[in-house]
Image 1 (cartoon, rainbow, N blue to C red):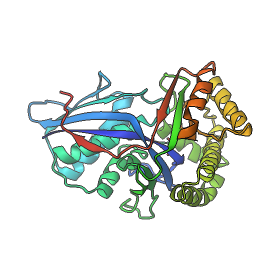
Image 2 (tube, rainbow, N blue to C red):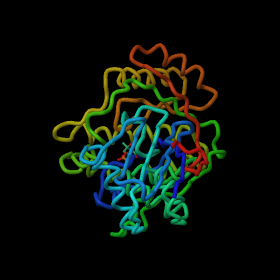
Image 3 (cartoon, helix red, strand yellow):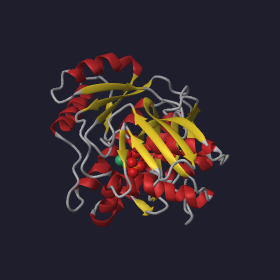
Image 4 (cartoon, rainbow, N blue to C red):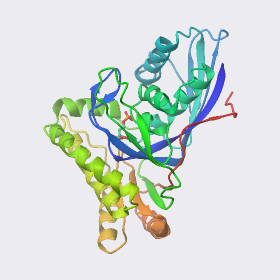
Length: 333
Ligand code: PMV
C-alpha cells in the first residue's frame, strides 16, 4: 500500500483558463503544453490502518484539514479517490517540489500528476495513461497534461461526465530535442490569487473572456502543426500571442488580476527587443510573475547571459522537454 512517483511540471503553449464544471475540473478550452524536464514533484503515499487521520506534508510542512490549502486541493482530491476506490484506510502523503511552489511554475501540475500515479500503484487501480490523466485532472487541471512527456494536448471534451476530457501526447521528448524554455524567476513568493480562484473570477466577470474562447481552436491548430513541423517561429509566435490574450482576460476581470511585477514587464520588453534585433525568442507567462522564454538550444547561452543582467531576475532555469510521470522505488519515508 506504499508507492512513490515522480512527475514533471508542464508549461502551457496554449493555456487552459476557465472551467465549464468546477467539481469535475472540466475546461472551457483545449490546451497544449511542454512537459518540463527537471521541475518535478516527488511523492510517496501509504495507506495503512496505523494512521488515525490523513497526513499531508508538502515541502517539509504539514498541511492540516481546515486550512484553505488542504481543503481546496488535497482534501477534495482524497474525496474523489475514496469515492472511486472505496478505500477506507487513512493515508500519509509526503511530497517535495524542487522548485518554488505556487508561484506560476505549475507546481500543482507536477504534484497531482505524481500523486495520481502513486495512488494508481498503491491502490492497484491499474489505470492506463488516459485514465490516469483523467484522475490527475480531478486534482488540478494542468496535472492532466503532466502524465505524458514531450508535447501534450489536453482535449476539453464535450461530455458532461468528463470521460472525454483527457490528455494525449502530440510528440515525444525526443521529437524536438532542441526546443527550450528559460524560466526567469522574478519572485519566489507564493502568489496571492490561486489559478483556481483567478479563472473562476475571470469567467464570471471579464468582458473579454468570450473572445478568448473564440480564438482558441485556431491557436491549437497552429501550435500543433508547428510542433509536428518543428516550426519554431509558428510555435513561439502563437504561444506568445495566446499568453497575452489570457492575461488580457485576467487584467479585465473585476477586481483586476495582475500577476506581473516590475521585473516581469522588464523581461517581456527585453525579449521583444532581443527578437527585434535578430535573436529569435518568445515569452510565455502563467498565473504568476515568472517569465518563460522559448528559444532553440543554439541561443540558450546568449539568452541566459542577457537574462542574468536584468535587475529583477533572481534565478534562471533552463528547461528541456521532459518525460511523463513515472513510478520510482525511492520512498520519502
Ligand atoms: O491547473 P491549474 O489550476 O494550476 O491552472 C493552470 C492555469 C495556467 O497555468 C495559467 C495555464 C495552463 O494551462 O497551465
